Image (cartoon, rainbow, N blue to C red; front, side, top):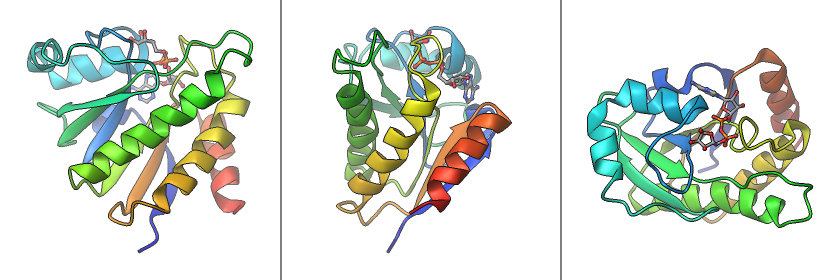
Length: 170
Ligand code: AR6
């Protein structure tokens, strides 16, 4: 089965998918941006659970329940901090998308929503992150037939339009 890719403009904490993805930091103990929103919406049990995960390396991913969220799971991944693009940032960002999808497939999840990882506090230029995200998701899904839907959850209409253009352009 070929997975459906789509872009939405929404608060990711409202999406009723099998897993939403958190753009976290290495501690996995919360922060600002989408990380803060997810911790607030999921409740204190998420922080308690995350304390048992022993952090997460940049480019890797770990899973937790969704607690009070409509999503049943949260996959926490840690994107690279942008410096100039010549310090391994693209490979690390691609790794976030790949590892997240691999983990989702391993536990049998079918629908996943990603935020625009690293493009907020971590400063990754959005016009470079978006094509890399779409390309990496497409390539990774070729080997993961169980995943049926991937949502790119944007926070602005401009970002959503960018993703829609990339999705339409196969
Ligand atoms: N739903 C969807 N997207 C959102 C939401 C939301 N509720 N809130 C923000 N965004 P950022 P990063 C978008 O900064 O760059 C944290 O402190 C936002 O507009 O959340 O990976 C962590 O703990 C942007 O497009 O994540 C780390 O320390 C995108 O989500 C650090 O920030 C990512 O912005 C991670 O930085």
